Length: 240
Image (cartoon, rainbow, N blue to C red; front, side, top):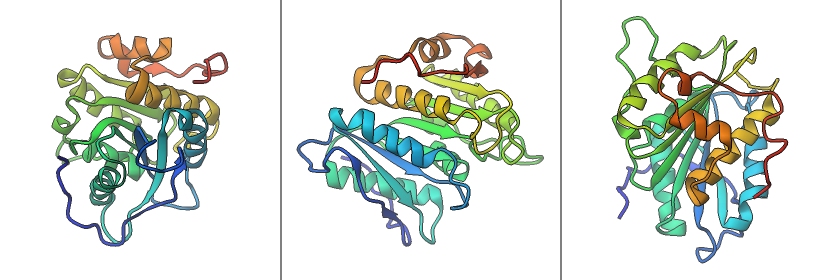
């Protein structure tokens, strides 16, 4: 039975995308946690569309999570509870961008969560005088962090430091760097979305990944935590 987070103030799930939403057909849920600004959504919307298109046939459902007046971390835990209530005992992926990426990493301890995807996460890891971000809750989860090397809003080095500590306790952790891209990951959005879809479907259903993801998971630090995302990634991948 899943642990129950306290009701989040004003949090809600957006409309389901993907499988038809009936409890008998849903076999996995992705909870998308947007960033702080609705004017800069990053890759969340195209990722939701791609997940629904490629994973719907496998029973995947994606919901965007509105955090309301509470924290994103609180809303993420509440949303995982809601996913269990709506769909039963199915794996849940927390997929967040920017502030939502940090929340996805921190809320990963919910027992329904089997995987975490953090895009350009906002973290305190490299802030002067700040305590290190927790990583204990990532144990037993599949973890992918994606960060642009030219991100001026959230420090790429912070996500590397977190990934390096997480990797010591959890081998199923990898991190990709998108060279020359900024916080919104716009310049290589197609590659970022393809990478995320490959990771989510592999983590939730097949257990298989593309060669770059497999190599990143297997490589020792720092290689698997500074894996470059190749231009054109995903063009040759089989659509699942």
